[in-house]
Image (tube, rainbow over the protein chains, first blue to last red):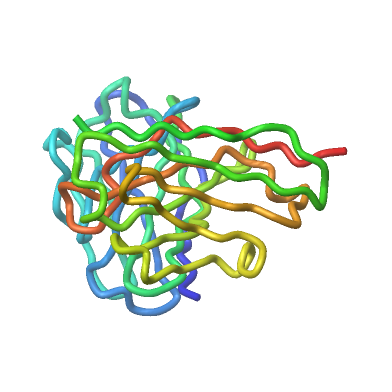
Amino acid sequence: EIVLTQSPATLSLSPGERATLSCRASQSVSSYLAWYQQKPGQAPRLLIYDASSRATGIPARFSGSGSGTDFTLTISSLEPEDFAVYYCQQRSSWPRTFGQGTRLQIK
Amino acid sequence: EVQLVESGGSLVQPGGSLRLSCAASGFTFSTYSMSWVRQAPGKGLEWVSSISGSGGSTYYADSVKGRFTISRDNSKSTLYLQMSSLRAEDTAVYYCAVGVSHGKYRDNWGQGTLVTVSS
């Protein structure tokens, strides 16, 4: 099973700042990695797929990078609606696995 | 518009059984693989199971293997999760999800249905 480790667990920033979230895989997942955003009481929302492709309707301030075992989600300038929990997920192999999440909170 | 509506969640005793359903619309159901993902209260996301469009291939997390069965009825555009030998740690919101527009990445999710396993 591929273990995804996200860091930091919690990130405290202010609107307008840049956020950098990390996801590290226990073995290579090539580029088969997605990022999801989840707000309280809501289902997850796909942000990034194939490590760096933005999903339909996702603002350009969200970007993903990386391949192999190290991945990054960057939010260039935080908007109030970006404060949420972010998960990475791999679809390189079974079982599919999620990271434990990074909570992005307002400072 | 893609819609996924889960149902069947309830309070069940440890050791009991439950069947969840996910009614799909807005896309050609039989063409797409489907998944169940769960989230325990206050915890992160956990992939549970996936099934191919034809239903011929199924996959399970180790935590549910042998206890849960995923299936689908393409004539009814409905996904199922039969859960048995339920444990307290199965308590969670269960989401069904499908990837329609972004390869096999799950870009459409239902609103979830709550399963509570408690005596």
